Image (cartoon, rainbow, N blue to C red):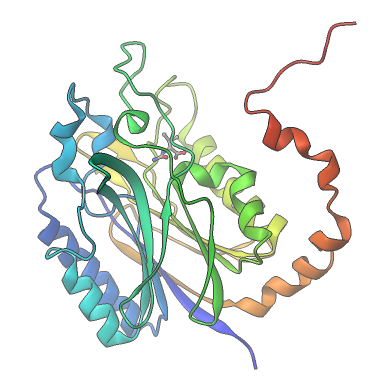
Length: 314
Ligand code: CDV
């Protein structure tokens, strides 16, 4: 019998600084209702879905940003989403800023969770590839301070068996790194879920065309899908947020690397696809049969070296 998960990508339009969590969750619930109408099993929301993309703002004392973080999950603001998804028997993936106190220390992560059909948190992922910079940089067109407000994720790239599927997560900039998908591919991932907040323009230069940036966005996810024989669901928070334009272009990509559903707007919008998990099998057992074809003895540099180095001079 075919194993098909009907997945909804719940793209969110902009969230302004002044918008409350309750207002955002109301929009997320409206998308959840649409997903229920569409018969979805699982819904994917964007990165940092509950607030504006606050790492664009500088604070001397990072604790000034703590209002943007969630200290427990679900909390009162988010519980209605957990409750309604459970009523509907739907799972979901949600990105948020996480603050944890451990051993008397405060840790902050850019996090997403997988909530199963029973409303239980089945998996947690913390963003590994944090883009941007830690200090205010006057040479940039605007700030992107993820390295200031978050620690790199400490949970790796796990894959969970949930909803009769092998499900993995990553967040935004992670989607551009082949290592992200390959580590999950080695755990036979069948669906990679991710959200993103990506500026339409490059903070380093006005010369990179928005169309080229969209190409990079989609190419990264299509390559990850194809090279690992997995579905990829990439969901944007988009539109003009506190004066900053974020790209849309949410997609669902098949294990062949083809886009099978794509957002048409730059607002709240649900995209839907039937993701036949058995479609992962062909790639995983032929061209990307890892057991048959990988040669890890030649890949050592990938884990031993972080930055690139030129070959030795003759
Ligand atoms: N939120 C992100 O991780 N954004 C990055 C931008 C800064 C390039 C991205 O890779 O889309």
